[in-house]
Amino acid sequence: MFYNRQVRTLLCPQGLARVQKFPCPIQTIVSNVCSKVFQMNEMQIKIIEAAEIEFAERGYGGASIREITKRAGVNIAAINYHFGTKEVLFKKMVRHRIEPINHLRIDMLEKATIENDSKPLPIQKVVDFMVRPLLSQLIGEPGTDFRLMRAMGKAMSEERAFMKELHQDILKEIVTKFSKAISDSLGNPSFEKISYGMHFLSCCMLGVMMQHSRLQFISRGKIDLHDTDGLADHLVAFISSGLEAVSKLSPKT
Image 1 (spheres, one colour):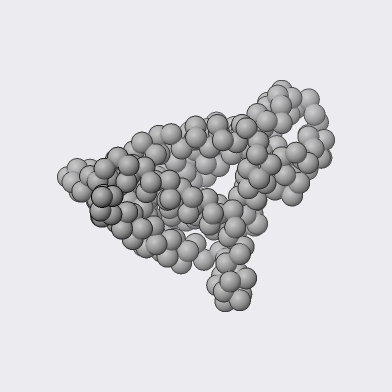
Image 2 (tube, one colour):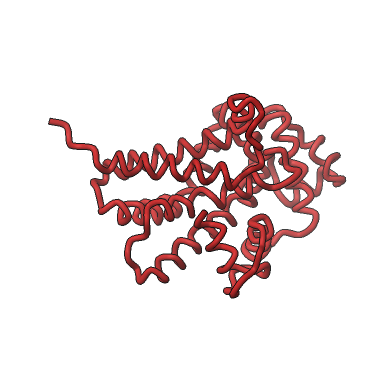
């Protein structure tokens, strides 16, 4: 479990400061990174949290701005002032949760690379930095009932055009930095193989997040859906082995 060992010694609850040891949960770390990177006032956060519930329950098309105002305890003018439209509100809701995680992923990768004298990291470690922060925040956070995942899943199933653009935009820097790190870890296979590998990695993570509750059915209720360490350990092993296998594929003859 590279992530728990690394992040809890590298980061403190005040943000990205280095400390010797700190048993800090990932939700606290991401929350504090979020507060540093994305300045939002109390009303904006209330609206974002209310929107997450509404979008998760009703989907993008069925969500009502009026219902969001009721949940947040604000008037429609407040939403119009801070967000303007439902689409802008949805985008900012996703960014509010995902972009701090991306900052954390990149920070962990860069710190680990420096500590390894800029030599390639083990593939399992690179994948762990990609996978565990996201799962820990979106699945491991108590009381959220996987809201953001359900909200995004429903919006994607409705084939909203802005979702594709949003997804590509928030992953642009992550794909660039992690593609290089994964390529270095695997001995720099062809661009084609890395492209396939990154595509499969992304699809695996999206599938797990969007259909996470299915695990309870498959395991006959024996696996705790909030066991993010167990989920991340297995997913990292699965993805890492797949990337290694793809990198070793022989060219077609």
